[in-house]
Length: 168
Image 1 (cartoon, rainbow, N blue to C red):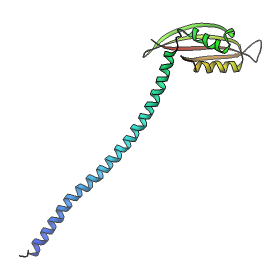
Image 2 (image 1 turned 90 degrees about the vertical axis):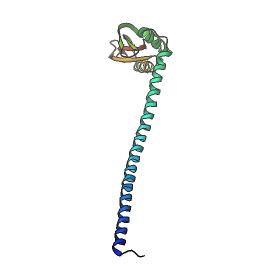
Image 3 (image 1 turned 30 degrees about the vertical axis):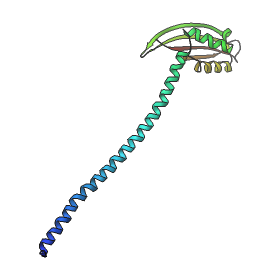
Image 4 (image 1 turned 45 degrees about the horizontal axis):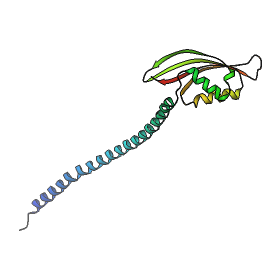
């Protein structure tokens, strides 16, 4: 019961062809699965980085929103008066004029005012800017003009436009 050689060769060729037809697609499927896995890992790394950045920005936004709710300041004049009196500059503050207010897209309003200080030292000016940026409310110096005092060149006359941001 031996098979003729030609049938045996045909059977072996069929088996080899069958194995080839089974292994080649599995090999290519494995390669594409590895590529897909690498792409998914890259996307996961990107999502982790974006998640960290989002948490960081969210923390910054929450801190700013918390600053706006901490203070009971109603206007720019009151805010600047509070800051200048804490620095002992209230006597050097010559005027505070309301410039106007506008609504900002979102739940905020911006109230601007022009403040004038006379005969301020450079150290006092630096402390004033620091207090404005570190205030318990959202204040921003939009513009500042600094000139030497006429009477004493070591002292400065400062005119600045300050904006107070508050929730509607």
